[in-house]
Image (tube, rainbow, N blue to C red):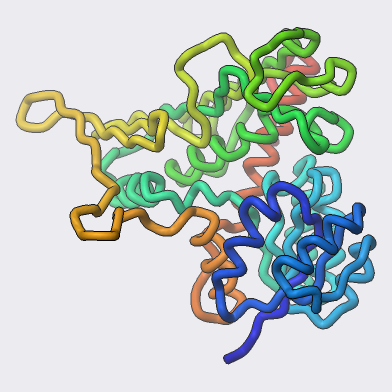
Length: 360
């Protein structure tokens, strides 16, 4: 059995929370190298996932020199482009965490490197693999919703500002909740609509709660001096075919209707919305009566089996590995992810200028 030699760049939260546990379950994968600017984190990952046998470094340039098949880029947003391009140029397949890049120009550089190298490039939008998202995508592709002309991308938290790492650092991340969790919701909306042609965007960005104290934040109190990104951002996007997409994102909003990586779709034949807890509702009219359908994604009823499907992170890893091994295709294309980044950039630019941002 061919072993896929994998290198991990960035051994922090997203690597340990998603990629490493998922890859560990795939027998074709061999952890061959770990890199982190904090060497202790790379050493820890090496010990836990490679029995201490992998190559460890603090410099990603040393990692991509190794004989590796694929590199996972799990670093802050500001380095996604640099590391991904270098890895592709070194002849490695690349899985880069979301968002694809800080801006559209960087995303284009990554695609150009992909084209030049002939290697695979994908982005970590794992929410596409959830049961509700897979079901909804099938409904959309079958035309059961008709023409989807109105959508809302939901990425709203009440009090859950991430206080670790560099999430609050605008220079390293490029923004706050819009580029962090808004990117997942926007990806789902565009994917369901199969519409990647934006005309213009309008945006508003808020720094209303950054200096608050006694916040009841789920992840503990934040440091106002380090909170340089927005706490909320909202966008309105008009597509070239006239469809509209609203993007709602916040880490801390005084609201009870909280949900993230969720969408609401309105089509000419039916509508759909993903609610809190990944509950999918389809609505429309049948037999001259309004209806609401809620698919059941559990498959219980068998002893010792709760019917839960594999996690979205596990499915993402399996799909990428299969594609590298020539056993399947990528599910998240970089061309799609680049448009997500382009729209996010447009919303931020509109918020700064106070004017609509036209993409062409």
